[in-house]
Length: 405
Image 1 (tube, helix red, strand yellow):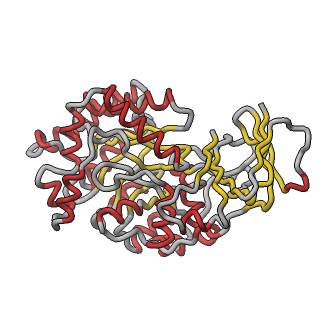
Image 2: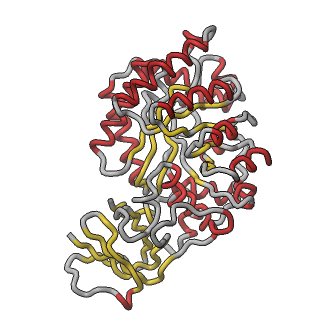
Image 3: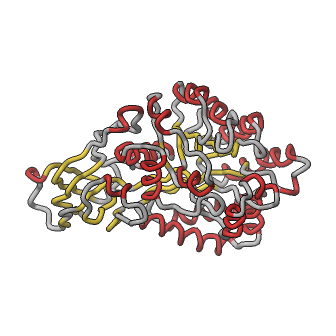
């Protein structure tokens, strides 16, 4: 079936085939067509152009006067499979306790792991599906979901099976990331080597054997996993066909960026604390730097230095980090706002970071991230808004009128 969208105020992120990401000064360029039309057929972008070239023989039409169309957001970093919220820790933060102090007291990731262990797969699926539908309503059209609240063989596999069910039942690309190396479980507190052995020798092989994950991830941070441990886990994942990704430099300069680059990680995520050494390592790689501004906002920690990263001629991706402890929101429009307000990114740079670069960071650049002939018909139709900068400017407002898949 063909559908023709006409009188589009601006058709954004129009790219030729073969452009998979943008970097440096090019991030400030957002190619668009004024007063445009867009033709889709059988879930694929068939053609587009200015209204003076609009085809006339298409019966199924939608008038988009005053509205804009842009690709759906590609959220490359989420943890939306979890058992319960953690607002009690939110109150602890208000009272002055740090992220590290809450974790040391049994909160944080270990708190979520305890709750998840007692929750059935069906209940996890129902709650995750509700969250997924919510983020879709804000314009997310591709998403990566991590495990990491299981911290045991059975619970990690349970989480990955929930993600597999979401993949089956929702018509958007969903990527599964095995993050068993999210924290050391309490029962392994005095024998961390045994837990790392469990990850390498049992959890990774089973996840790969049952085709439950595309990626392997590690929280490389002081108090969590060392550079050496991270290297061993990423290499084990690669040996089983899992592509490395990494949580790096959230709380301190950890060496996580470098070990990620050395293992050809698809992305290194967080980057709140980086130096020239990390930037230099990224300049000599194909790894996508990924910032998570909602996490910085919620925890009150520094924001990733977007201007330094872009000025170094690097690409930059933005994602939500949706999780119950440090980012209880999957709203990518709010991420755009934070990037502009707190990271001093231009609206063009921020939109590039959540569309084409987001698609690269989760391995779907061939089908998503831009308005390109032959790519999936996955896009947002906005409300009638004055400009695309308004999406970031009007934080708290949902500017998406329709999300098309």
